[in-house]
Length: 193
Image (cartoon, rainbow, N blue to C red):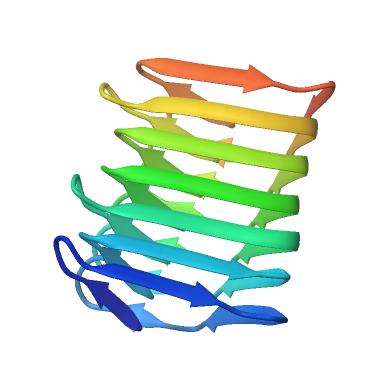
């Protein structure tokens, strides 16, 4: 965790009045900005997660099996240009991950599996709109890789997947277990694998 290292049974809450930015943080291990083995809760109006890099899992955050990460932005969440040398360009989740925002925009994130998110436990995403564009997986899941123990719940009014790519399978989503998507509208365009 380049910024935050949360140990088992710890509880960290950040309540920020305006915007929170995690920019260009680096870890030579897991979690470019945040490593979660306890509980981390970040609440703000706008959340910007960009140019974070991990030499292992989770370009922005690595959530271990006993860990819980909540990202709650009343307006917008922007996730762009994060990179993992292994899995989860932005988030690697082996615990519990909750992402809540007005609009969530994910673009230009890169990893081997799960260009934006690698999930192997519980991941819930809720928003008015979700736009994922130009995310890239060297192997599977250009945007999301949901592995054997993963339960992925996406509850969003408007979803758009555009120009995401994986070198093997699942230009947008590679699902190995349970993936539930609830939306009013869904647009998938120019994605490839």
